[in-house]
Length: 160
Image 1 (cartoon, rainbow, N blue to C red):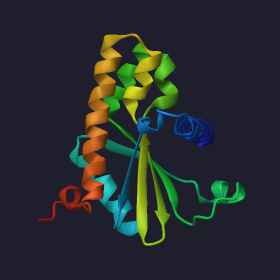
Image 2: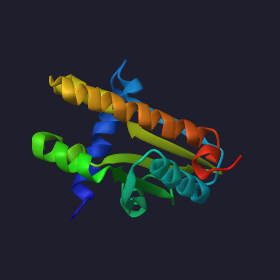
Image 3: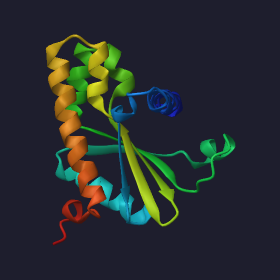
């Protein structure tokens, strides 16, 4: 499956949300003191600790460089719970562009930025209470994953 259109849609949505006053909180972002490689390992471990499976890691470096961004390390991590994604895709096909969940990871010097769209921001577009509950669960999990990353990934990696 060609994921480039989905990544482009996701990045455009993320950029548009950050450009609107009062909506920037719909982007969940943390800065990790870990280098990029260690952050990628810790992130994937934390995702799995939270009961999700990493479906794909997409390199975005060359596309972003072509747009004028200066980064040599930029990835989007796609993850989800297989049965949950399958069920939601069948019951709510309009959610397919947002599934599986995605986290952007990019290097900034010796630190790493980890960012995701807050799933509860999708609640504005869906009146179904089942979806709002699902979005809130995802938000809680994403906040916990990002907290792991901000704390250096120690909880995610099982370090003490």
